[in-house]
Image (cartoon, rainbow, N blue to C red; front, side, top):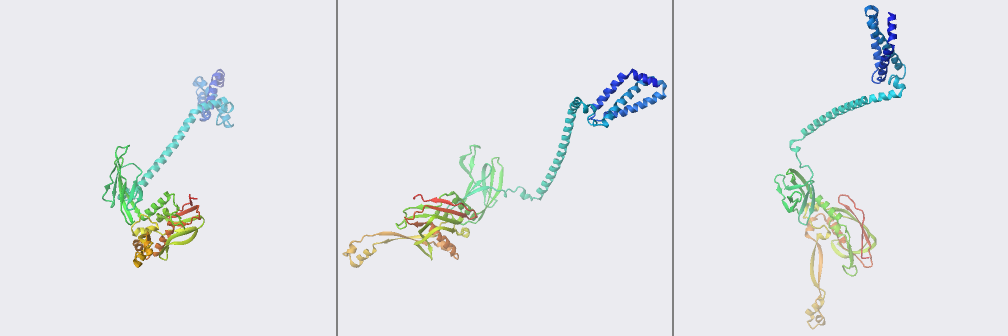
Length: 462
């Protein structure tokens, strides 16, 4: 029996050895994928044992099984040797050949490109799938929360646009107040209501929109308010796609709006100080004033004035209930408080100007400065020399008094009226020719607490 095995082994060594070596080579190269050498070793070992047992007990099959036994034994020896080398060295990851020869390692890499890319794609796909699941879950939760919040809103408020803001610009004229609507989109037509129930169109201009070919809508509406109460309006408009937008609720505190309007007027007027030369008598024939500020004093809280030096002035004002124009005083720097207009604006007719002069009325009469000579004619006759030399010298005299309306406004609040009339001096500050005022600096504090920088105003006459 042993002779038969040795004979077969001797006759088939080259063939079986080559097969075993090729198999071992393949399994070693494929080691990074799986330990095929070990798998084949175990299989060939079992096959060798089974064939050997059959060879041992079935003498009739010895001739047929001898080649199979030799082949299985050869494969078992080769793969076993490779498995041992892989296990008891650093070759278990890449294999014996790849670990010792770079050419086999490169070959493994070339074979592994497709596998690596497939694994990467698989990993990315798994990650994307997980992210998609998370995102879907978040969307469902958000939809659920949004639905709950919508359900909490009362039906009448779900489409209520009256709480939305519609921009506008307000303008105060002498008798009227106008509001210019400023939506953020193109509008075909505006509708206006005072009660939120009945709406009227504002109409159209005689001007065509070149982009749409339609007449441009009127966007300004006016109303008259002698006093300045709280006011509420409602506006709807038709957008360019014929969709109704609104209603928009416009609630106005007209007193506050008027103060903001006067503040804007002051900011837009760069000429706060006015100089006048040779305007009055030769003793004090030059003057300066801050009338642009005083006209809009309701938008102010304070005015600070700085001169380039200290000067003497002659001003008109209210002192002990008498108006005088000959009082002299010195000034270099002063802080002037503006009387608050709130109560006046709420309760009394709006003025076109809130300068102190607006609270006065004038009375003008004529007088003859040569009246004594005229009296001589009556007393001594026409032959009197004074009577013969008499020539009329008629001059007009104007006196300023507090208006009855102003007196009525400030009954029980004379202190405020006195503060207003004290500001008369800054409507006309007369100074003497020898006092060459070169520069006046002004800083204002607005009604809302905002403060300007000091602005410089130079007298161009020097």
